[in-house]
Image 1 (tube, rainbow, N blue to C red):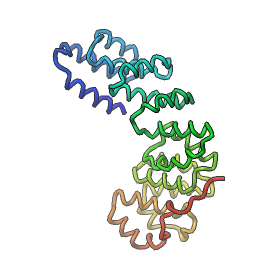
Image 2: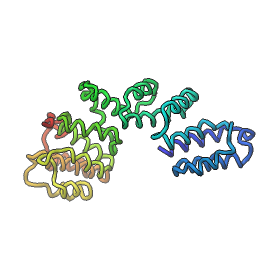
Image 3: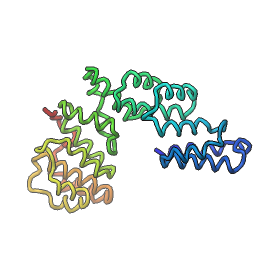
Image 4: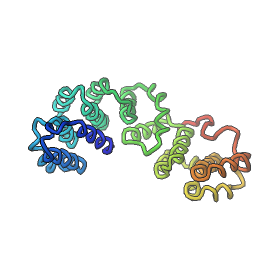
Length: 279
């Protein structure tokens, strides 16, 4: 995320005229302020920005100041910043951060106000919007969460909270979870995959050693599959091993799936089997 900010800052610096920068000292102050923001150091940020009043990049300076203390910022101050910079990228960026703060706090009235003006399609903001609906008795939100399980990395805080709610309320299926684990394996997110597997009931969970082998030595696991793949965890781990194997040796993985491994797996993917919701 911080690199996106830097790219935007670099683009702004590239188009600012030399007179507007008023020499290298202003440019150095801007870059110093950016570094202070990245380091979370408000004292250094203030030091670098004290000579930049009225600068063309003033909205960014104000954004950095406010972003660093957003958790404690008064609603009126945030609204004022968003209004003053209504047509600027910094307003949209801060609004996204503010929505996440509001979602964590459960301040749904203000969340709704800002979400209506938010132009980005951001997963964590959507997760908080679903949580808001659930907390207001709208269980239809559950039906819209399918894409969340396909997030190819660790869940952000809001989505982790929603996933916990779905598991507790019996609205996350075994298939949802295994589908997520497969996506994470495909993207090399093994730690996140293990986090997702914690949502499974004990009798639906794979053996820890076999899972580790599927991640680290997939070819070996495929060559030493258990005698029976009748149980779903065993089948799923075999598929995960094939997914990892295909990352490094796609041709060999394809041959395995067309050969012995493919013959031992069911015709339909385990992850597309009928969902068994939690009770």
